[in-house]
Image 1: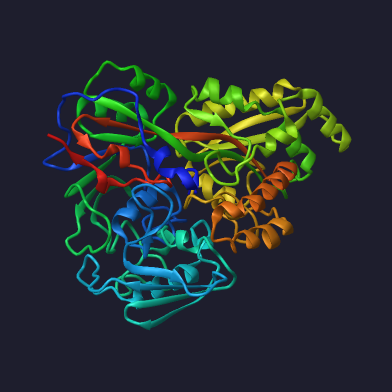
Image 2 (image 1 turned 120 degrees about the vertical axis):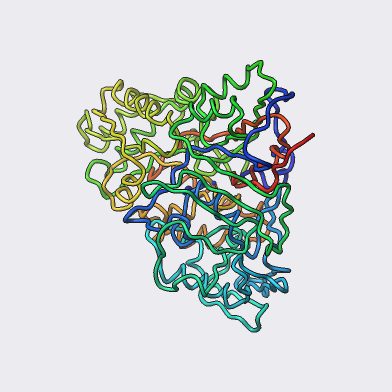
Length: 532
């Protein structure tokens, strides 16, 4: 998911990186001229997701990093900033004042990597396919407001929306709206394996073992026509079981750059290293971490239990002791740096307090200690996650109001089980699909929510979000999201924990690393090159 970033009026300034260590001379990594990227992401075929790189399935930052490089979308996010720019499209615009009809004209002569022509019919096919497959844990909710797609000509596409949505252009920048070759994909079902046929800046070749990708090679797509300017001809992505081995590979010159996922202690080491061949870049980010509650589970169905948890969690200690200040405490689903952010949880609960939490439970007639199981995924959000959940357990149990236990589950089991409502309380992360406050509220509320949560709030779903989407000037939508944040802080279907920063560790003589991540924290490998 994600789910994955800056103040809308001042994005460019916030994206400027802070160099935590100076670059110098050093060895060149990789074979030939390939830029080699290290990651701890895992891509494997499972029963629930037989085609991890199918745009109808993929809905996490790791997979989207692959899809952005291999598929085109009509629009894309620019090098920096939040206003979409044309890619497969020559131009796009709303055709009415209510933001209900969106029209795009394609570039002439577009082709897929297999040589097939890309036309408006392929765009229509791709959107209708994602909606028809309606993959349970996929990104279909980003497209669910589309009523119908028309193709007046080979180069024209018209989207008719069910209701006004000023954020629709940003949704078209996501891989949910990736353009697929209608001759290579089945309209009604998923494929198998790691096949990719797109028209993006790179083609993809993978090496696999036991149904898992061990290396991915991205080669410049000679058929690509779009607005991306490639600074390299080839990129390799290598996969590591842990961050320690990835860091060792960086220092040895076996990889050029690493981003996902750096541990807090690694960041501290890289900040203070005397190794002139490696540098660390830091910039603001909008990744968030939160607890999700199954509001139909008997343990936490009474909102007083959820409020008591919110009253006890000490985010300052969590980010200081477990994350070594590589993240910041978060008191709202909409993070700092995004229009509409306000500290609703801090305003309601103040500092952690056992006495206040006890009063909340007593007022609801709930007898302490309340049994609670906190579930987290062991292999998706970084190795610090387990340590952080042990801290949350201690904070709750120290109050005497909870008898909390912790369990860790592999991501391949965790994600589908969470969606089925198996866990009462579980930890999730979210990278924005696009940098707008809408994307930190709408995906979690209502019928088609990303979590498959049973929580509903009519005011948010039927009033605040629809009203906000009529505002083309997104600053003016802030008031709607601030009201939604206050409601969420009161009812606590979700409990924000921390907001991450962005870190990239890179070897010397690699250029463009300051642009390696865009405003949605997505990798832009085409920006990377080699200096002299």
